[in-house]
Image 1: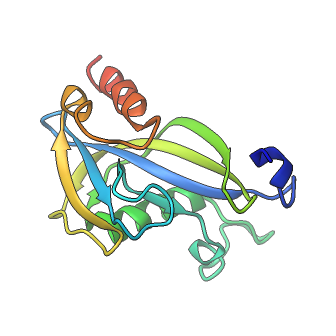
Image 2: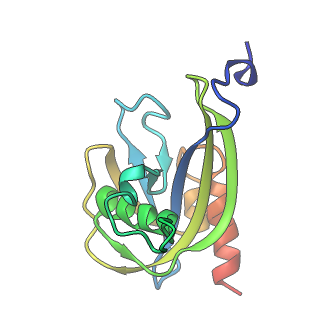
Amino acid sequence: MSGIEKIKDKELHRIAVTAIIYNKNRKFLITKRSPSKKAFPNKWTVPGGGLSTDDYVNTPPSTKAGQWYYSVEKTLRREVKEEVNIEIGKPQYLLDLTFIIPDGTPCMVLSFYASYVSGEVKLDEDSIDYKWVTAKEAENYDLIDGILEEIKMVGEIINR
């Protein structure tokens, strides 16, 4: 059975965000996932994670109508801080990617890029290693499918 046939609800999506983080030397931060992770164990990736309603409902709404602005950016900054303990500059949209999680949940990933601002990299329990690499060096790592292409896209943008 294909992933499409397993979709639970065609209206609902899990939303995740990722950050291609680069430093002043034009190197990119990649992290190695723990071998205990269900999805992509031991693969290299970039910081990111899922949007949760807790990222906005526990803060005052931005509008009188009860809406919140910048929930995606707030989530991205939270995930980066939790996963690698650093601060980033203003995130810039790169692309989106959709897929079906094995449990049948549709997932949309919003990929951003941002400059490293401050902090010393300290990994959470979901990662076991990290490296700052050039786009060319990233080719030597077992990255989750698509991450290398995203790193190269960002490399082209920041080298303009």
